Image 1 (cartoon, rainbow, N blue to C red):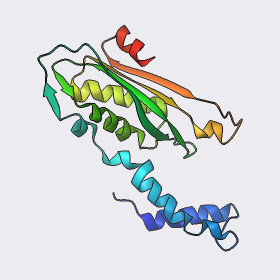
Image 2 (image 1 turned 30 degrees about the vertical axis):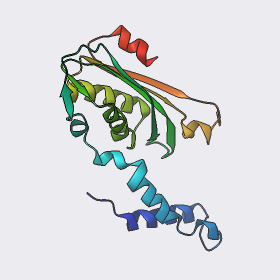
Image 3 (image 1 turned 60 degrees about the horizontal axis):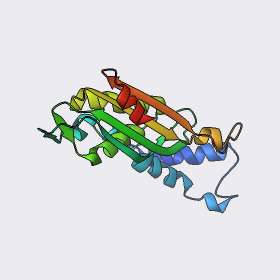
Image 4 (image 1 turned 135 degrees about the vertical axis):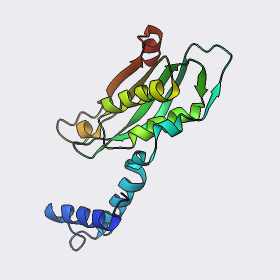
Length: 182
């Protein structure tokens, strides 16, 4: 189902009006509904259009031995399904290959596939790890997300320095992989 951007924009405008904010009284919010709808459709929820199996299908067979592949510093922003606020930060992804490797760029695309959805960060970390085992055939895999949840920073107790770290693994138990994610 493709998004109904006009309906989404009207809903955002109605949401703001229900909170007492309209373009008639606050001209700077004119067009906000359209911009928010477009941002969610094109960016914040773009992961729904990606398929992890496709992302991990472009592999290369390897005859060389690689014990562990680790990619750090993958930028990601996960949108919290409870408050619809983003949690920006970084991901570290690691896997122990069997007979196939995937390009390093695919690791970033895999994180975006799951991160650009309405999801808890713990779920995203587990989905990334599971996909590497299921679709790439990794012996073990893991994902660590180090995010700044705006639902903690911009509201509630306003913990401005708060970071939430989630680590998930899949496949065979692997102490070296766990250390790489720390």
